[in-house]
Image (spheres, one colour):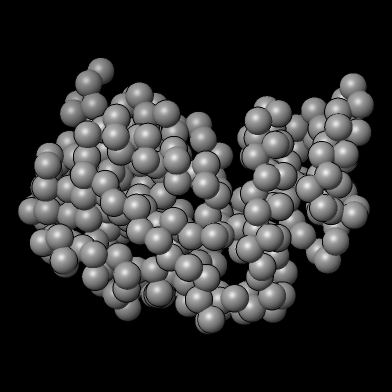
Length: 262
């Protein structure tokens, strides 16, 4: 059945069409990829995708965003965003501070390029979780069409599959700052270690993963269904050696499993 046969998707496209034009904050994740596709369906070439490149965003994620925007044929800009003095010590309100800084920068680009609306991929499920960054989005008048039109994560994955989007079963990711305890100074070298450790695990077939850092210890979280995969056939020895080669002194596996929104 064609995507336009689904009333909920038609409602979203209608909402977006009424905006006239839009800039989409595009990370390349499940939500923002679906939103960008819907925006292009609604607005055609009156859409621009904006991707943030920062030390705490994995380079492979930025690369995936660039590739998809190119395949979609949408105008796309990658915007550099350094670690700021506000978040370099990883305070407990880092998400609010980070979102406010980044979306101020995105708004500047949005207006410079002649667009009137800035959209993000917040969905309706996010309302039931602690999301400090949402306050910053509201303060800056960033629109969240998926939330406004009642799209939760299951809806987004379902329609993404129908649309043939490569992200329909992609695990959710969060910025690398979430791997480091609050009030711990953030160094680029540590972020790169975390990024390389997670990419190694992802390339090994363990998709939903976090490598949390406590001092010189790496604590691996994977989906509970993959815990056996980590330890089978002496794979744990390979993982242990790889992460130690990256500079971790101790490597542990969290038996509680992967917590997506921690």
